[in-house]
Length: 59
Image 1 (cartoon, rainbow, N blue to C red):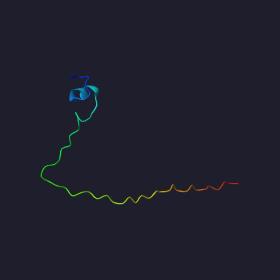
Image 2 (image 1 turned 30 degrees about the vertical axis):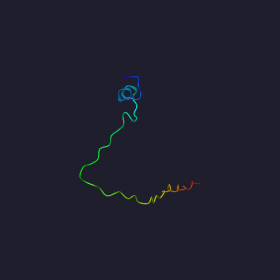
Image 3 (image 1 turned 120 degrees about the vertical axis):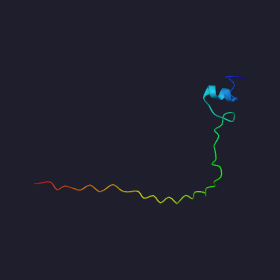
Image 4 (image 1 turned 135 degrees about the vertical axis):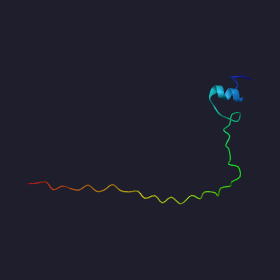
């Protein structure tokens, strides 16, 4: 149960990996419950490139 054991937190730190033994804990804000964020429908417009102007050649 040391550095080479990938099932322990010490082994996870040695192998630079994450898992159940070394999970990322998320902290919640105490006391305040924020309203859920409502996503708006994506209305994406693609802008076309301006048309190139044709220059008349001098004769």
